[in-house]
Length: 374
Image (cartoon, rainbow, N blue to C red; front, side, top):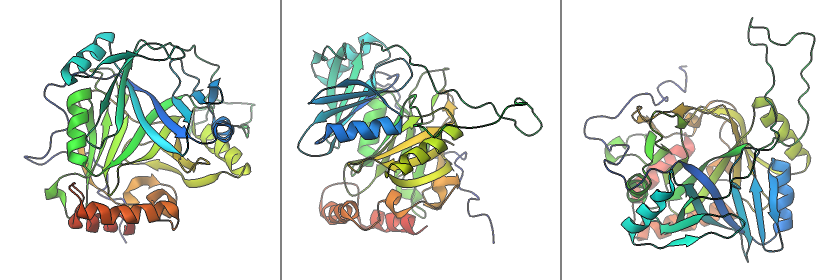
């Protein structure tokens, strides 16, 4: 029996006439993700999980919670108290203060001051799915915190550690920074073009449903264009689906030991493990996925790919077995097909999407079902 992963790596490029992975003349080029914003009914419960996951609290009031990593910069997660759990949208960091003004002028949107706790200015946009997308600049920069150092490893015959043991602490894996967010949209092609054109993002990898390449991709891993300076393989990933929703967000930690020991710390406290540990194909990250108490999927990752702006997109089929080079099979929970409220909501969304005006049609549904079975 052949290797099931053979041919799944996406170093192969586009065929003639396929979708390009960047806009010819974008309005601006954002530098990075700044933070993600959520609404949750129980901030105390959210903060307890956040600390176990490895965040540090910056601000905690009855109405708002700001969480940060150890890297210098703005908080990477903002949570406001609300009647139900909800993802409000991402905020991207502009490369220069003038880019916020340029984007506001191009879109006819006003520039506003952010709250004093964050500082700086913001322009609020809406992507084709209706999600609020913020672009910010001049925010307060929090100083770096003491990091969780990576372990010194003896690699093969390369000896770096002598007369010393390895004892990774059973402690939270300290989050260094926000890495990426993954969004599902019923208007994938339209939304992708919007992000490339308005924010100057560029595609690292396209995925398509097996047997449907001629219809174009259904998922893309998208990075910031920093010119010759390498950027994360993806800062944003987008996938076609029957509902417009948050899929997961990912946070960098020091190394595999931090990720694994931090996972054991979460497991001991009764939190729900979703999938991992493994190594992805697109992006190459070591990964481990968890559910927070509100059901949001969050990822610890380490050792991800970094690309400059010279690489063109790779193309590969989208399959469940192709989500990882090694590790346990993708779980029903991670794939969204585990029986429960979430899968029931997605099933209802399928029927609504098939009746609606969007890109998710019957042929795409068949492709999605093949992915879940692969």
